[in-house]
Length: 538
Image (cartoon, rainbow, N blue to C red; front, top):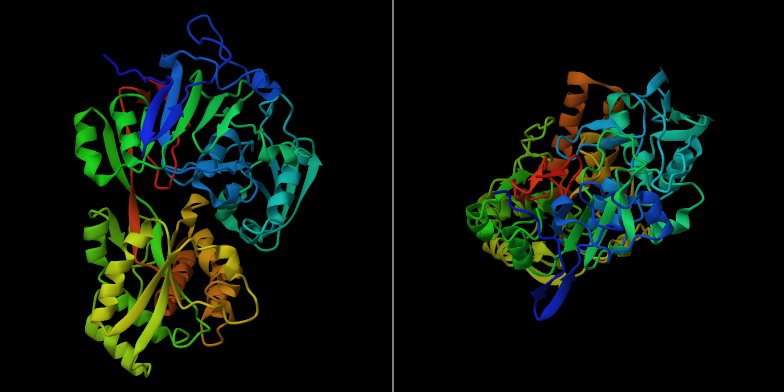
């Protein structure tokens, strides 16, 4: 007998605090002969998160991160929960399949019609409507691009776009500053479309054209998020359940594990390695997917001695990454041999690979004239903090003394001030593959001409570095294709592996668990969050 999801009110204890998990998604019972709440009812506020829905027709998941930003402008402020929810509620002209990382037609009807290397037209899907029943128009698309192009987070990734203008109600004209070739659809997918002139609603009850719509009083990123189907959606991934709820269980891993094991939810993210066997015995499936997420060291490249790349390289040779992976990641990570993981289609083994080599680290320091190296290692207070003591011990074995200073890294404090920033080295983590998977986007995020290189690492301001050379190679690769483009990217990978202004230690594997007898079509993804697009209740 198939396990049925028990999406009912239930208390979960976390450190003595009770988390109420409400399964509320529809205006009435959804069963044979009973309709689910319409998205127009949602928009009017007549549907509440306290209304019941038949358990057998619910999709449900447990998330490992909380969040409050559901505004699609600027990647939801970088919050993983908001970005995952946005993929279900909003559409771009093109969207990314987070399983394959390939762009597919969302609001667009067909691929861009190229008028030249730097201009194209995109026609909107006929009959596309927002969840409140209003039509999606070219003006909405133009407005969404305008807001994102001027946004500090997304703007530099859209720098290839010169202008987006309406040709008619269903067609937009896009002019580029330089050719993007087949990278264009994926880059256009960064912008999610919303009703123009209603930006204020994006911070309260965002409305999109995707297969799902938020429930008005169910948008609480600290405890749960409730969705109902967008009855106006006519795209390729219609919601085929009466509702969906995501329970936010970020404070206690055991809560998520228990919820999956007893059938309260159908899928969870971030399965702890210690619980994999027990979950599989309960009938669940657990899969580790190689991702791009990584802990990295970022150096103040304008501050001596880290202005010398040999000193930066010495730290990477000093760290025993394989030991970090075994002792702290239970083996579920892959040591960097290049900027991209080996599973990536554009992988190239870098000309410099940092295997643990104490003697080489010491030789590099000696060549740089360093007899005694002491510095402060600023450590972000998330999962990377567990790595810091082992890293410090490895450095000590090379005669390097680092003082660990754990704190919440506030990136806005590392803007370009025109002066040398007040830090030595930072240990933090990141995963720009949440935005896209193509090498141009990934390289541009950390090494493009933006706040990461003008501020933060300051590498763009280092006259001895290879920043300008890298920008030239990236620009040439955008206009190239095939083997020529790959060779240009390979040169980029070699440069950053040699310069290491910011560079990773390993690529994490992300564990997702789900009950295959409760949900059909579910597949894990390589980034934080859950993806129920195309799923049905078993």
